[in-house]
Figure 1 (tube, rainbow, N blue to C red):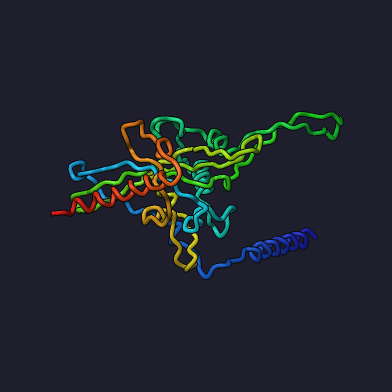
Figure 2: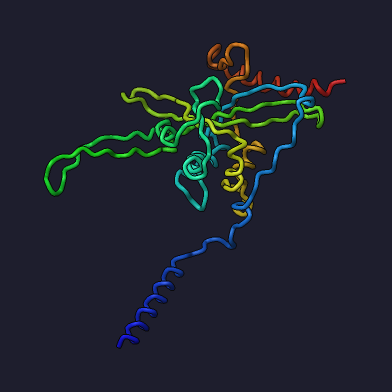
Length: 280
């Protein structure tokens, strides 16, 4: 009798295992091993003596622009893809990615804790009263807030443009990026923008190289986030340049159409600087 019971248990176990295997459905043609194991291509070494000219630039990427939509979507994880903001939050929580406070003169001085990052992203605990099922009395209960990654509508980049005489070309290095949160005020009468946290770009490149971005032309040849930034597959406008006035923003001294023209002037001056270096 005991032997029969043991055989029955074994058969049930095998049946349950087969059911679990049946639920594991592979929707791809093959196992994707290339992107999850990718490493970022290191930068070429730059000597101080080879840099003839350099300029710090801050630019803004609007995630609502058509070219930038692959960074905004998916709003929830899909096909092992994350939106840019969800990937940064994942890196901070689970891969030790360092976040820095935006409220310092230099972007990379004060380190933020994951809790401070959640607060900057709008995750605020709320208190409510819940009825106790046993006593019938109302008890105070703290409800944790949730991050709304869709509140991030823009991302700021800090980068350095420089002319390298070793290669005789103008090049650029991204130094950091900062999500900008856009949300309604408490009275609901207006919209506010706030910088959330800064991420040092060389530190996040390894994470970016292991996560792909949607390619509308070919699902078999998707770019990674590292490809997207290094190859500059995004649209943006210049927010400010390094200047003697405490690095003031363009909007601090002009507005409207003139601000757009000033942004284009700075962009054009970088192009003309490379052109001037080639004049004989």
